[in-house]
Amino acid sequence: MDVDVVVVGAGPTGLMLVGELGQAGMRTLLLERRPEPSEMAKAGGLAGQILQLLHYRGELDRFREASIGPEPVPRFPFGGLHLDFTQLEDSPMRAMLVPQPRLEGLLAERAIERGVEVRRGHEVVGLRQDDDAVTVGVCGPDGAYEVTAHFLVGCDGGHSRVRDLAGIPFPGTSFPEIERLASVTVPDSVTVLDDGGLDVRGVGKIPFGYTATERGVFACSGMGGTMGVYTAEVEATEYDDDVPMTVAELSGSVSRVLGIDLPLGEPLRMARFGYSARQADTYRGGRVFLAGDAAHLFPAGGVAVNAGMLDAANLAWKLAGSVQGWAPPGLLDTYSDERRTAAERTLLHTRAQVALRQGYGPGGDALRALFLELTADEQPLRRLGALMAGTDVGSAVSAAQPLVGTCATDRALHVDHEDPRFAGLLRNGRPVLLDLADHAGLRDLGSDWGGRVEVASATIDERPADALLILPDARIAWAATVDEPRQTALPALREALTTWFGAPST
Ligand SMILES: Cc1cc2nc3c(=O)[nH]c(=O)nc-3n(C[C@H](O)[C@H](O)[C@H](O)COP(=O)(O)OP(=O)(O)OC[C@H]3O[C@@H](n4cnc5c(N)ncnc54)[C@H](O)[C@@H]3O)c2cc1C
Image (tube, rainbow, N blue to C red; front, top):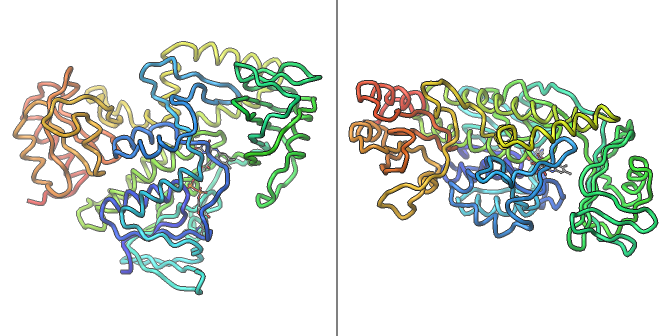
C-alpha cells in the first residue's frame, strides 16, 4: 500500500480532511489538479458549527487572525433577507470572514504541519478497487502513474470526477437563476450611508440589503471604501465558468433588475454562479467516499463550506479506525447515513430560501415581511440558527437521553488541567469519555478501550450528566443521566463503546 488514504481536491473539504487524517497519524496524500492554489473569490468565510469544532481543535485563533471583518458578523443572508443573530447572547449561528483563498491557505498550512503530502498539478483520471485496496490513476506533470491506498475520498467539487468514476448518481435540480456578486470601489457619484445603504447622484437613496423587483433581486452594502453588489435573475444564457464576469456585465444585470444605471468603481472581487439542489445517492461506494460539494450542492450561500468541513470531521476518524483495524463493522457506513441526514436538513432550509428569494410581487414581499416578523422572536431565530449552523442534526434521539446526538457545548470545567474548559479535551481529535461525577467504574471501563478513547474526569457547575462519551466531531454518543445507577450506566457505556470503537483492547 503506497499510502493509507488518498484525498482528491484541495478545496476547504479536502484540506480539512487531510488535516484531520494527518492528526490521526494516517499516511495521507492530497492530489489537486490545479498547479497553484486557487485565487478565486468564492466563500466569504466560515460559518456555523465548524467554528466551534475548530475552536475545540485549538485552531480558531489561526483563522481569527486572518479574519477581515467584525465578529460576530452583524447580519447573515437568508433567502433575500438579512437575519440578525447578534441579538442572541449565545447564538447557535456564528460567522467569521476569512475569504476562501486565505482559508484554504491556512487549512493547507495545518495539513502540512501534520505531515500530509500535497501534490498540486496532479489530476485523478481513473480508479479501480477490490476487497483490499483502491488504485488511483493520476496524470501528473511528469506523466501518468498509479497510487494504491486503503481508501480514496473525492472532495473534488460539484463536477466530481471521483463520483462519476464510482458510478454514484447525483440527482436534484439546477435552477435557471444566475447570481452575480461583486465588490467594487466606490465611485465619486456614490456616497456610502451610515447604515450601509448608498446615495447615488441623479438616482437617490438605495437601501442597504435586498430589494426584490419583478425582474429579480438586487442587494447592496457599502463599507469603508468599497461597495458590495449582488443580483439574481432568471436567465436562459449558458455562461462559461472560465470566462470571468466583467463590470459591464454586472452593470447590465443591475439595470435589468433595478431599472437604474448604478455607477460602479474598480472591481475588487467578481463572481457569477448558479445554484443547484443536489445530493449523492450515497456518500460511499466500497473504498471510495464523497465529501463536500462532490456529495451535495445547496441552493443558497453561506452553508456549503460548513457542511463540507463537517463531512470531513465526521469521516476522518472512521477511516483512521478502519486503517488501524479497530473499527467495528458498519462504522464506515455511519458516515454516509449521518452526513446525508445532515445535508437533508441543509437542503430543507436552502430550498426554502429559494422560495423566499424568488417570491416576486406583493405575495413574495408579504412572505418575506412575515418571515422577518417571526424571526424577530428569540425561539424561531434560535431554531433557524441551529438549522443553519448544522447543530440540530441528530438532536433528540430520545426523550430519556436528550443529550445523545447533540453537539457538546463548551463549558468551564473544574479540573486540574492546563485548559480548564471542555474545548481542551478534543484538541487531539480523539474521542473522550468525560466523567463528571467521580465515577471510577465508568473510567475503568473506558480505559479498556485505551489507545482509542481518552478518559478524563472533571466537575462542572449544574452537571448536565454524570458522564459523556464524545465523538471526535463533538457529537455526544452516550450520556449517563444525573445519578444514574451503575447497574444501568455500565452496560450502556459498554454497548456504546463497542458500537463506536469495536471490541475492547484489554
Ligand atoms: C461565488 C461563490 C461564492 C460562494 N460563497 C460561499 C459562502 O459565502 N459560503 C459558503 O459556505 N460557500 C460559498 N460558496 C460555495 C463554496 O465555495 C464551495 O461550497 C466550496 O468551495 C466547496 O468546497 P469543496 O472543497 O467541497 O470543493 P471545491 O472547493 O470545489 O474544491 C474541489 C477541488 O478539487 C479539484 N479537483 C477537481 N477534480 C479533480 C481531479 N479529477 N483531480 C484532482 N483534483 C480535482 C478542484 O481543482 C478543486 O480545487 C460560494 C461559491 C461561489 C462560486
